[in-house]
Length: 235
Image 1 (tube, rainbow, N blue to C red):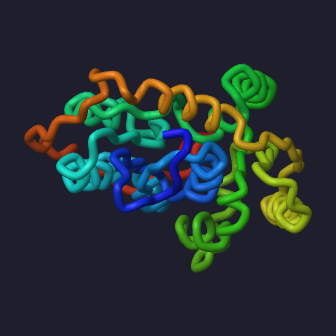
Image 2: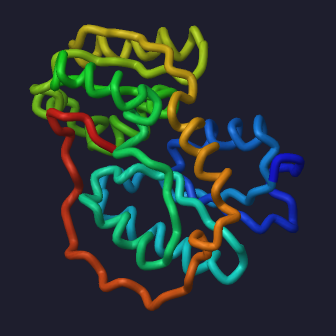
């Protein structure tokens, strides 16, 4: 895979990825010259984490007959293990990690930040770029701005985990923190462990244990209401 291009017609490997990671994953794939096809799942699913599994499953059932290997580029993302149960069912691996904040910051650094201040609200490049649609509209704050203090009452600071050295994004993140009434910190992470873990997983894909299987669909999970912003940040 090292000498091939992105998204060729003859790709035998597919990545199913969260839309919030698309820009970064495309850059990583190009940097390493992997011959893979990319298929996204809507980032808005994070507002209802129970929707992540069914949407990923639809992608898997579409792609397993067409590709020799499939990698899911997601954390657990609030699915409480349901996503991993689904992936075990289809014998498809995913990148390690509970969510993209931990992937970008790295496990030890993320844990240290949460120990220092459990009430940390995290932003990434994707979230800063699309804050109006992803957060304000997604949580209904565009229609009910008075709910801001309710949603963010338990947060004590905003930390922007920056993937790019983009001054415009940094300034916007600072304005978001100001609008939310939170102290602002910027930490440049680059792609962090997202890249390192993805590279390690791709290096193992030739092993037969990663052969996906088209199994019967899993029973649907119980329906759930939209998730609210929590004290401990999770995606």
